[in-house]
Length: 331
Image 1 (cartoon, helix red, strand yellow):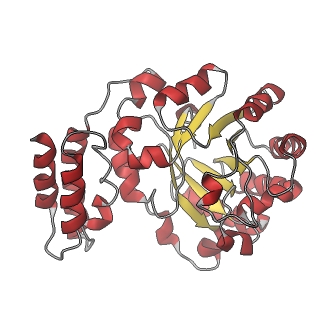
Image 2 (spheres, helix red, strand yellow):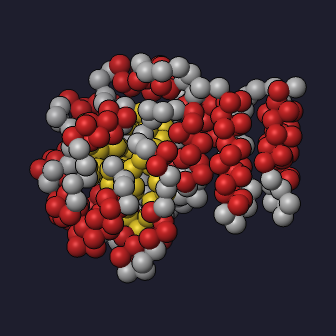
C-alpha cells in the first residue's frame, strides 16, 4: 500500500463507525459511505480460523466504493492471524484491526476478544506477526480491562506492549468488560464509562493515535472529545440507528471536507445498488434492514420503517418498495 493511502486511512480514523456483528456488513457500509466520504468504516468481526482453516474468503467481499474500510479480525494465534492478515491485505483492506474487546461467550471460548486483555504479551506477539505478514496498518480495539483488573494498572502496560510491537493506532472502549455475570448486551451499557482514563492514556502515550469508543452518540459529543486532545472517536449504535444524524454532516463538521449529504439523496442512490443486489440473487431486506433508521426523528420516519419492515421480506419486493417508503417521508 502506498504511504499516501496509509495516511488517508490514518486521517479517516478521526471518526469511525464501530465494527458491529450482524450490522456492519457490506450493504450497511455501502450506505454509510454514501452518507460520509471520509469516515472510516469497519467490517463485522471475521475470525482468523474461519478464513485460514475454513477457507471462508467470501467474508472478505466488499465494494471498492466502501473505502476507506478496515477489516476486523478475531483470533489469538499469531501464526493464524498473520495468515488472515495476508488474506485481508490481498483482498484490498487498508487496515487490519485485532479485536481485544468483544465479551461474547463464543469469543471467549475461542480465547480471543476481551479475554486477551489478560494476555498483553500474546497480543503484542499477534500484532508483530500481523505486521510482518503484510504492508498494511495493524491496529487494536480493546477495553480498559476485564473483570477484577484495575484499568489504571493494566491498561498502560497493555498499550506499552502493543506500541512496542508496532501498533500505531488503538481504539479503546472506555468500559471494562465483565466476562462473568454480564451478557454481551449488558457489557455495552452496565460497566461505567471512564473517559478520563482514556485522556490520561493519551497524555502518557502522545505518539499513539488513540480513539475513544463507548457511549458517544452525536457529532457534538465526538467533537468535544477531539477538542480535548484525542485523535479519534468511534461511534457504534447511534451511527447505525441514526445514520442520517451522525454521518450526513460528518465530512464538513469533523473533517472540514465537502458538504453535508442528504438522506433523501442517499436513499435514491441506493436504488441502483439494490437493483444489482437483486439481480445477483439477493433479497431486498438484506439491504433495507440497514436503511430503517435513515430518517430517524423526521416526519414520516415511522411509516418509512413500517413500509420497509413489512414489505421487504416478500419474494416480489424490489426497489419500488423503497420508492413507496420514500414517498411517505417526502410527503
